[in-house]
Length: 237
Image 1 (cartoon, rainbow, N blue to C red):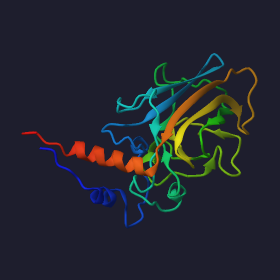
Image 2: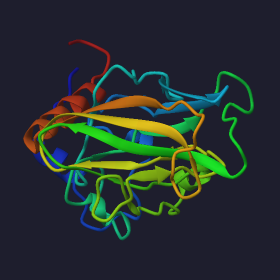
Image 3: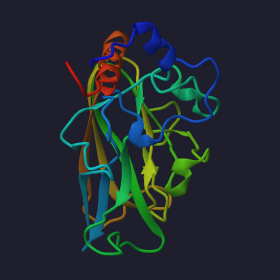
Image 4: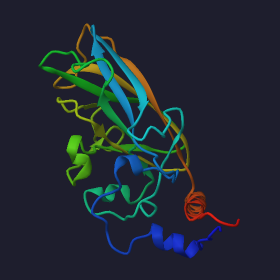
């Protein structure tokens, strides 16, 4: 039997009468509404003075790097949220893609001097609106209220390049979008000194993240369709 859920129930489910402490885990910040739609990682390596970056599926294994990730609004994500996460309340956001040390070539994939770090610069944005990025948590902070939510990359007064934590822990930053449509964000990853200046002798690499931001009405229909499928039970159709 197919159980139909009313739009009023969807509105109640998606909206919250009280402020939530933190947004969803990064792997759940997608409007796709698909079970197992988890994290994707931009895995970074530096070997033989050459930087490489590649997108790989996250722990769920069901989110494809070739798919556009769907941004969601605070209401759809269980918000609005308390400070410092209130920067996510006014615009759709997504934090599925995180930076991660390459997991395939050994235990020291980032081979750089002790007084160097990895810098990540947002160099191009193709899309209909303004993109802003806020610093998320790294490592175990992803499961706590330890996110800094500092404005980085595209936000007012932010530096040209963001310096990754020198322990290169998994880091999921929060990307917000001002208008519906498709967005392509290209980042340049390079070895830098601790002030963010590129170091000579290292070759950089680029990587592109692809997102789509749907109008709020479209997201509501997607949520309704997902909930309807979830409530399908066995028996006579």
